[in-house]
Image (cartoon, rainbow, N blue to C red):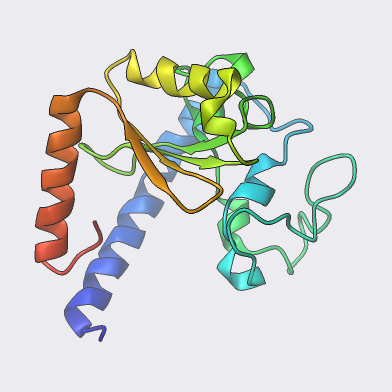
Length: 179
């Protein structure tokens, strides 16, 4: 059951995310990366307002890539404000673009949280391009949580950091928050 305290926590998180928007736009300007023909996030990620589950193609992806409802009122807010880690950080190389590596990677939302990767196609995390993206982040001291196409969750990174992440998630869960 959701309590008013839970709703306040969720609202505070949403405010913090909006406050970081200028930082996100600055990061986009620094990388200079555009989605181009990539629409991997449209297939890998869930979009609740469209009732689209993770791992299924979005009905609004145009044949040549991109969103057919971009700029219209039908396009959900979640889609309009989403930027993958490849676009906002130079920690990933060009060959790690989601439609090439097979992984859509979200940047961590806060300290001691992993990058979260979603497989675009089954087995992408085990193939060389996907492994390259995971290894690129892990070699820089980050951890990566991978959501596989078959519903498994896998965690990659330094053991000491992984233990800290698990402790942080357990503490958040014990307080009634999101892990």
